[in-house]
Length: 181
Image: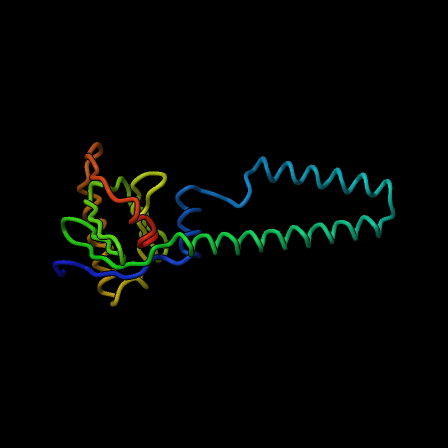
């Protein structure tokens, strides 16, 4: 393995959503939210079926479903726009001692002890510091496939050596977003 493994860019929106769902087991709607909407929908349909004709009720359900679909699509677009605004592209290196992140205005070194856990998804490797700070890597961030393989190997080796209770170093908040952090 090389002395350091270079990477560039950050994970994309779809990978960030996939990582967030895997780490926090998030769904678009909570169970109680889905149940409340289902009950409200059923009660509304029953009320309309009694008060109005079947066709009026059917039209109401179709229009409501279409509006809900449009709202969900718009929410996804807004979420993507916000992600792109917050994301800080940069480059960096992984070494035996640390991970170095560099943007146009900031350079930050993170010791391996900064991270508490690692999670691997299909095609993603996520270093977890806490609920707010994560650093994710994907194959497209590396120049060669061998660099990606070396990255996975190094991260797994380093995370095996981290002892619970190791004191993490401090890091600059301006480095958040680099590599999906």
